[in-house]
Length: 104
Image (tube, rainbow, N blue to C red; front, side, top):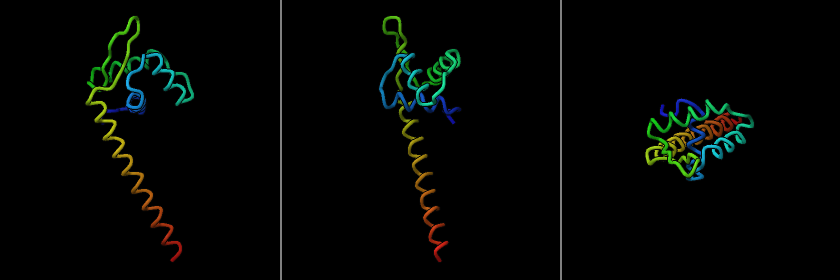
């Protein structure tokens, strides 16, 4: 699995929605979502791993690093979304089938 962690998946999802973000702004959005502080070294290590894997691109804007998804990263987010939507849809069908069998 290309994500290897929920943090990688969630960072890519945030960037899919936002386009490009400075590293600190991306960290802040993820911390708000998780409702906890993320160690900066671990956070930037995760970004580095995603850049090395070809899922994110990094560019420098003044003194800031700005991150965005590559085409490959965007495709992975879309693929994960489709996979997850299918799981949810199948789960909804199972719940409906279970409800029907209780009525019988």
